[in-house]
Image (cartoon, rainbow, N blue to C red; front, side, top):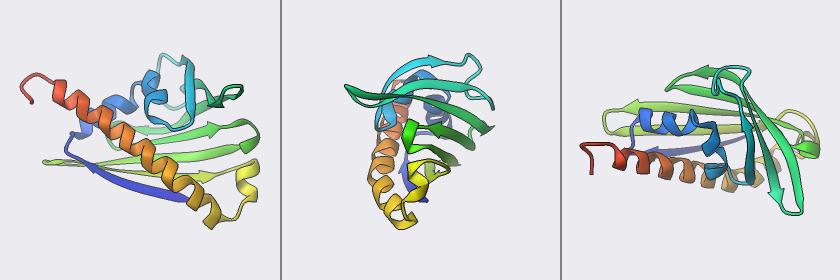
Length: 151
């Protein structure tokens, strides 16, 4: 299991707006190459993002499904990555008056990821997930800066 935490002065609403926009997924999730389709009900439980991961020409078609959604607080995803298997990804938002703290936890559920010892999985995922959160928060901060009356 890998857990990364970050802080931003963007509001919970600004961070959630990025998470609730399935088409922005490739803008912040490291390794996602392109979005093929997003369910119209994203991010409700059962909604899906169809995307591709990897680097051309070795792209793998992937599907991420929402397992649980508590708007502005928690989003649990089931990400499928071909031979790498499934992973559970949980994003938690904790708002305060001066911004938002977000945590991202990822743990393999099946496939090759389950065969690798936990500490090695965590070591491999930490940089990737840390950069993903960095990108997510940059998008949220940009949205916050563009909001009328701010900046």
